[in-house]
Length: 75
Ligand SMILES: [Zn+2]
Image (cartoon, rainbow, N blue to C red; front, side):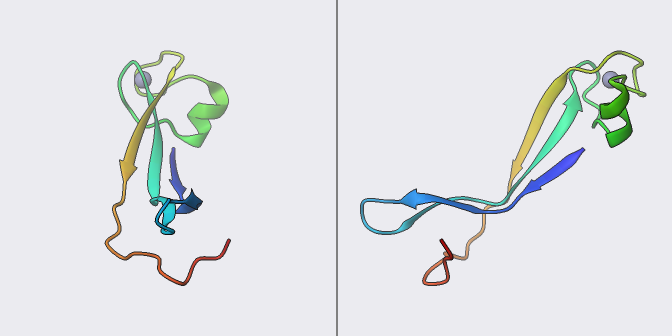
């Protein structure tokens, strides 16, 4: 299951610029076969690909944005 996490402002740097966690995606994988876990599999707890109870393993993809957030921040 793929979860997209929107950019978050987590604070301010010493120079006054904003500390931002970039937009990224977290995908929950079956630790046994590395298959992405679907919502149904999450509910049943059984991986349909390998038939094992899946253990969460996370795969995180970070989208690096080249556009700095200047003056448009909503805090
Ligand atoms: Zn599996």
